[in-house]
Length: 198
Image 1 (cartoon, rainbow, N blue to C red):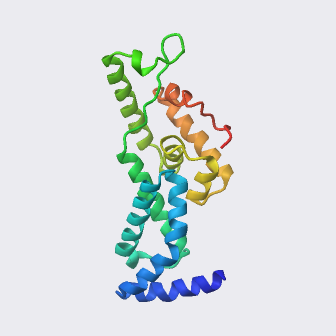
Image 2 (tube, helix red, strand yellow):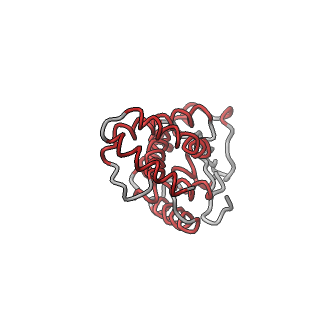
Image 3 (cartoon, rainbow, N blue to C red):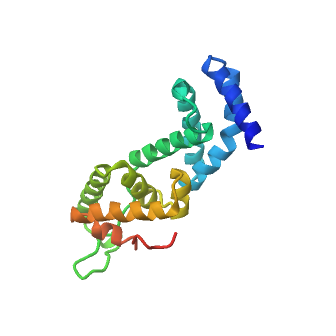
């Protein structure tokens, strides 16, 4: 079955790269459902998943000339999907993070003053900058885990890497952030550790 699908993809890709829009529509029809399921697993929001999946297919159509067949077409599509999803995450505001008070507990937002809100916004901005500066392999895992709340298994599927590699990259990424001494408490409030279960 997979070989038949691959043959179908090859023929449709060849025609689509030659400018046949109906051939690309057939390709999109073949891959739309699994692409949407992957987007939904990552986004956990139907509207965002639909938007990301649609953006993925549009970008695939515009970029089809760069597909060289060195990987499966579906793998190439998932790479675009992952990129579009992470871009959407970066555009969105960071979720509010409860900062620990002096005694180690977290203050509810209703009891915090405006200066506290500004401090939270500043801390969130610094975390985003620190994460953006990470190597791509660490940044992707950190963003999916914390900003998208994806499970370790979901991250492994989305990035097409083994679960052990996800854990290793998560650990190394967190270590790089800890070395900057600005985000440890922010991530600690999420209860995160590299060995946390998905």
